[in-house]
Amino acid sequence: MAKTRSAPDVLLLVSTLLLLTVGIIMVYSASAVNAFHDYGDRFFYLKRQLIFAVLGIVAMYFTMNTDYWVWKKFAKIGLIVCFVFLVIVLIPGIGVVRGGARSWLGIGAFGIQPSEFMKLGMILFLSKHLAERQKEITHFTKGLMPPLLLVGTAFGLIMLQPDLGTGAVLVGASLLIIFSAGARISHLAGLAMIGVVGLIGLIIAAPYRLKRITAFLDPWQDPLGAGYQSIQSLYAIGPGKLFGLGLGMSRQKYSYLPEPQTDFIFSIIAEELGFIGGAFVLVLFMLLVWKGMRTAITAPDSFGSFLAVGITGMIGVQVVINIGVVIGLMPVTGITLPLISAGGSSLTLMLTAIGILLNISRYSR
Image 1: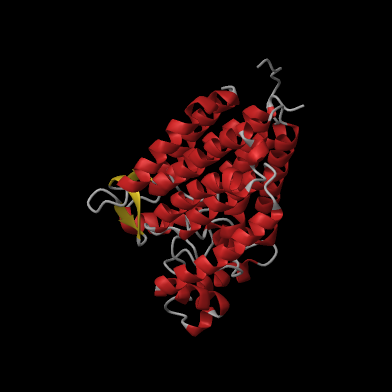
Image 2: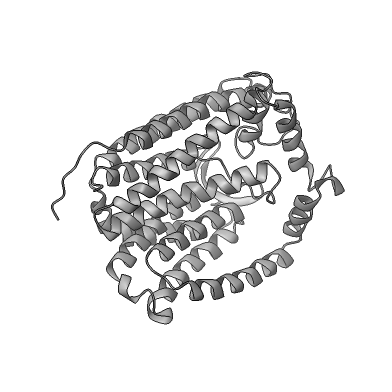
């Protein structure tokens, strides 16, 4: 398949690098206090972030310069490997429990999160599968059910950890691909109703989820328990006002706000850099999503288009969930802010995926 390759989308690349730069700065600012208290080194989290940022940039450079249709060959085996790791991580003694979820494989502070790999693996496979069988997608049993069963199985394994945030991103990005492939809205609406019933079942099955829902509606009902994170996040955002307290001047990072360098890093951004800083970050994300969707629209083939939709959707859904939690519009789910939060697997995989997106943009019409 001959295609003419040009330079990658400049705005897409610049917005990615700017977000990564902001993330590195804010990871240090948000984590220095806890890093010194826990490890005796103010730069502990910064060093880790820089290592994974360099690895991610190398991976992004590689995928940006690797023709995207090459990944078709590895889509099926990649998905199988991702499923194997999702099963392995659930085995006691092998999977590492962090933050109440058995989501990690590794030793000590370093590890990988198989669910992060599954997000990209599922996007690649669905893009290949639906590009080859797009005409069948309007048929419920033959076209729509097979990909949904795959997504449902992956979601179920992730929920056994449990990790609702990552599972929600996986489902959201997958549904965007399926919708883009031409699935009937009536089919998706019916399945959405079933999903709501299933979500209610998940909440009933785990009382802590019900506490998170009630805490989201009124966190002051349990200010020292289920509502603690939401309240502390709002205490960080409020004093930031228009211009913030100043870089490094956050008060909430002094052991008040849990996970200030990961799930709630946007709270620290809003506290230290104010509305202006927070808005700047959101504009960069909107620019990234806009250019990603434009790449999907102008991609030269269905596989590239679906792949761009999935990667862009993965970023967009994750941003919406994280920001929604931080500002109190959604229940606490425990999910990082792409390219900004401290993280190993999430940061490296996100940059790898954006590299693929950049490669697709090189062939856009």
